Length: 314
View 1: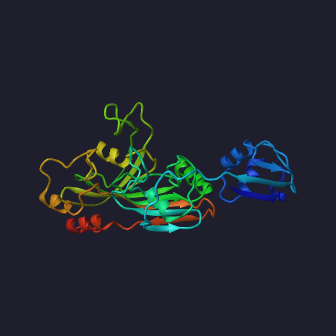
View 2 (view 1 turned 90 degrees about the horizontal axis):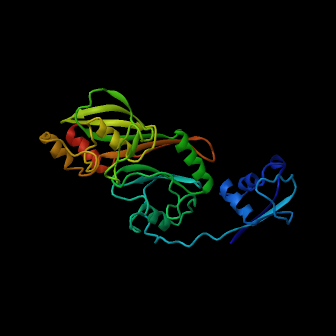
């Protein structure tokens, strides 16, 4: 069990106690600080106080931190491809076929297992079996994935996802010749009314969803796109492109290949027999240093080979 002790500095005099504790204890969020105070784990000059109390400068604050909950997931060998890392966060280059976190009875072979195996500190915000996970990528989607190492970073990044200030770019190969060189899809997305594991465009009951796209190249009845989802709905790009009649190649859920596809497309897709969707770039404000961070993930070899066989230059 950890502990902390400090004297309230002049700049924090008269602030709420939960704000003071969060500001002075490394990696502790305001929510976590408020919980510690409510549980009686924090004392000011030896006395318990309320989270909204406003102690003055010079008073001594001391407290204890609870032991972390017992680990229920097995750490696995560290095999992560790290695009960016500091003391507060990481950006992982997730390969296709790797689940982000346990679910539906699966407790092994996930990114979370690998993160635990790396021995790194991870934020404890959110579900206990999703340490550090700020957002997700589908099983077969590859590319940039943010991981928070502290609660402070987790809250800051989650806020940016909520206010849509994180810039995300994807690359996808879709079926058909997309007519417009650029477009904006505004179509609300919700749970499919029949197939509950799927999402669908739901005009009346769905949540707002916006995706911008640019056609980069076309070949063999396929279009290579750059996409920016301005919202973060489940399966958003896959659902939106399927709603236009241009499903992502290799998508077994929202659209299979058309009847009688061009032979050149079939041959090329043999080099990438999976969902051809890649999270290519993330740009965000660092939640601690506040500088803008931009991270790019190079195309994985299977998608790169696919484009070569289609004669497309990324």
